[in-house]
Structures are given as structure tokens and as C-alpha cells.
Amino acid sequence: MAEIWDAYDRQFNRIENTKPFCLCKEISAFAGGMQMNFVTKEYINKGWSSDKKYCVTDENGTKYLLRISDIAQHDAKQSEFNMMKRVSALGVPMCQPIESGICAEGVYSIQSWIDGEDAEAVICDYSDTEQYAYGLEAGRILRKIHSIPAPAEQEDWASRFQRKLDRNIGKYGECPIKYENGQALIDYINENRHLLKNRPQVYQHGDYHIGNMMMGPNGRLYIIDFNRNDYGDPWEEFNRIVWCAQKSPLFASGMVNGYFDGEVPLDFWKLLALYISSNTLSSVYWAIPFGQDEVDKMLKQAREVLEWYDDMCSIVPAWYSESINAHVTNGSSATGCLRLQQEL
Image (tube, rainbow, N blue to C red; front, side, top):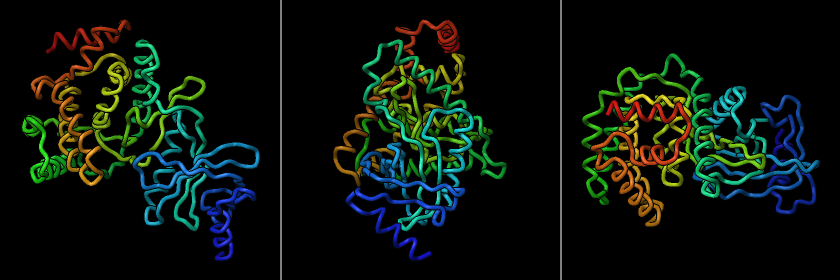
């Protein structure tokens, strides 16, 4: 076995691509006897994950995504791969999980390759109607993902998230960089903590926003990067919608309406404001180790969040109400928005 691993290590890390390298059944825990020979390997320098990512090509010219993680993450990565298979079985458009196992570099997974473009980079090239329609699809896909329940032994959500709120408030208080009127975020959190009580929990993608989506050559929207998957309140999964709203308010609005089929409950907005407040508080101290550019990005985002929520005096962000009022023609979505306005 040691000889096999040594041979794999020599072949897989070779710069030259003149000979095939192989992930064979002897070193794969999940291959099921499947042998895959790759002739090219291209490093992918994208994203925040600690995984090493490659585009690999087999002898037939078929591309795959290869991810390699530290061996210490074995259990977590095996669970991630197994959950991806469950999500894929729901019909979610994504990189299809093909094989997972152990290699000389750590834990690997092989997934199908999506030839397409980053949704974040191209969404604004589409018409207003198309941006909204893609948002609707993103919301419907998320609802499918959330159909997978959390394990029965999962810790109570309120207890778990209350600790996170306390931690984020504490770290923000220690942070040398403060937001203008950041206290409004803290006040909103403390006034609305009670909303966490009795919230359901489901499987979460963990980082669901337009930066983790792709547009395929067939015009289809694909979801990528499940490496932060977790369990929690399904509505908490919208906490990264700020990235969508910054890029395309119509896409973000469509995502909300697609998830709820146009009937958005008022409590959703109250909780979303809580989750976004928490995320925003944590963003600035998270950004400091990554340099001034990231700090500036988080400061800008915080300003936008406070503007959208009128310094947390409004529970519905401006990007939603403005884009819906201006552009939505879908009957159910328009009706839902009108009902929301009447409730407010």
C-alpha cells in the first residue's frame, strides 16, 4: 500500500502532464471499483476555502472538479460528500458528487465539472426580468435544499445562536474599528433575540449567495461550494443575501419571493434583520487579518446595510421594496408585496 501511495504522490504532483495519473480503487474508500485516469491538472485559485481545488481532465477529455482537504477533516468531508449526494438526489443543479476517498495529500472528492461563468460576474448583463427570474430559481432551489431535516439530536437553535450573538457583540466591542451607528445593529439584536425561540432546523448549504452560483452554457443556474454546509434555522441561510442585493437587488428580491412562492411572512423579515445584523457585526473583525481592502469592503457593506434598514428602524430592506415596486409583474409576488405593505 505504501508503494501505491508513493506512486500516486509522484504522479499526481508532477508538473508535466505527459503521462496519466490515477486515482485507483486501492486508495479510494468510495470508488466502488471505479478507476479514473487523469492527464491534465489545473489549479483553481478562487474562493476562501482551505481546500486545494483543481480542474482535471481524463483521457477522454472529460473535465472534473477535484478538491483535496487536510486529512484532519476526514469525517467532516465524508459527511459533506454524503450530504451532497442527498442534495443531488433532490434534482438540485450542482457539481455532481462522483467519488471521495483518502490520498497521499489528504481527503479528496471528485465532482462533475460545470462549464460556465460565475453568476456574480454576469448577472448584470441580463435584463431586469431575467435577473429577477434567476433570483426566483435560486429561491426555489434553496427551498429544495431545506427539505432535508436536521438530525433529531441537533442542539436547540435558540441556545446555539444566542451564544453566537453574544460572541459577535463581544468581538465587535473589542474591535478597534467601529461602524458609524453600529450601535443600531446591537440594539436591534438585543430587542429581537426572543424571535429565535422554537425555530425549526434543516440542512443548510452554509454559504448561499450569488458568489457561489454559476451560469451554465445552457442558461441554467448552478449551485457550487457546499464546504460550509451545516444545520440551522432555514431563514438564517438568507444572512448572506446582502452579497446578492449589492450585485442585483432584483435577483435578491426574486430569491426571497421564489423561496416563499411570493407569500413572504412578516416574521421572516424580522428574523432576517436579526441575522444580517449579527453577520454585519462580525464582518469587520473577521476582515482585519486579510488586509485593508477587505476591511474597506466590510465597512462599505455595513453602510449599505444600515441604509437599507434605515438604521434598523425598518425591518424590510430598501432593496426589496424598491425593486418589487419598480419591476415585479408576477401576480403572486405583487400580491405578496401589497399584503406586506398593508401589514406594515
